[in-house]
Amino acid sequence: MAYNPNQPVVIFKDNVERTPGQEALRSNIMAAKVLGATVRTTLGPRGMDKMLVAKGSDDIVITNDGATILHELAVEHPGAKLVVEVAETQDDECGDGTTTAVVMIGSLMEQAEKLIDTGVHASIIAKGYNLGMNKALEILDSLAIDVTPEDKPMLLQIAKTAMTGKSIENIMDQACEVIVDAVSTVAEEKNGKMEINEDDILVKTKRADSMTAELVKGVLIDKVRPD
Image (cartoon, rainbow, N blue to C red; front, side, top):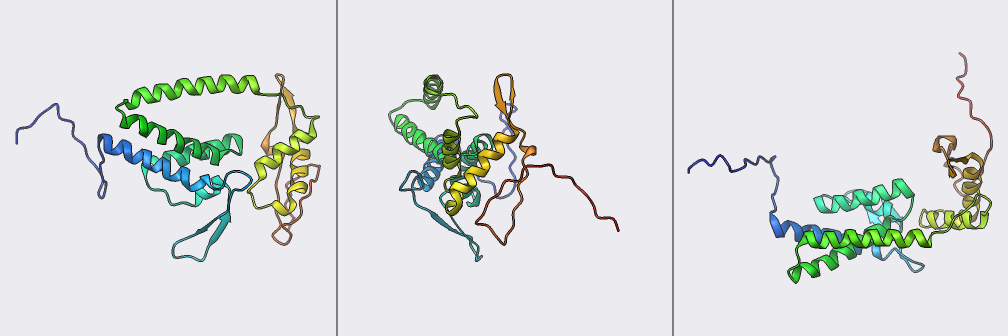
């Protein structure tokens, strides 16, 4: 066989499978659709819990929280891992909305697949989605309302929305009161916006009593008992 210097040399690790072109595209779309379908049924007031059982273990997790479900899944597909990373970023940045993000990705990929079937190139679809994203952000900015620290009912509602599915339904009202009071206590106005330093709020848990929540306003001094 003649050597072609223009032919790229591709080196893979052992047990690596290479999927080219359209096959890889379809595989990534399918992975996103599967993850979207997995968490879709947890959305809304009629959302259902998922029971996750680890293979070869007695560990059982029951939750309807999208971030928890995705964290517990042993995802290996590269495309699916990207979707999980999006959900993790959403959770880190906003603390909520992971399920919605994954469902939206699955739906967008489903529609993209239909367009690909009609002959539309993937790059054109991506450009269209970018245009749609920019328009959506523009509309969202026009619909957004300011929430002030004095509007406690609104803050409580925001906290309840974020805490739904976190397995604290029995103490939801109490926990949300504590959360809002804690954040309001350490919040500072900077450049016209309210900001908080998460390090100013220390969370301590006691296994013996998980059905109560209490806010202690004070300063924690790290001390070591002398010998």
